[in-house]
Image 1 (cartoon, rainbow, N blue to C red):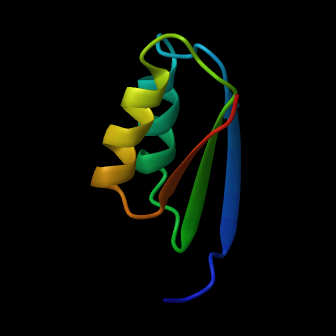
Image 2: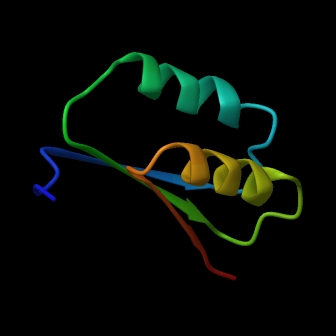
Amino acid sequence: MQQPKLSIIIPLYNAEKYLPTCLDSIIAADIERLELLLIDDGSTDRSGDLCQEYEIKYPYFRYIRQE
């Protein structure tokens, strides 16, 4: 696997309402060799579930949860 050309870090906390729009817009940009890091700072909504769904579907997404 090649090194990512671009890394995007998205910090999130209770972003369930806006997360799909944000992530879908990045996917639509069709950037080659992208790495997307989703850093969840202990969300209490469905943000984590959404991130995990995207992580399964898109191998260049990486979900990290911290308290």
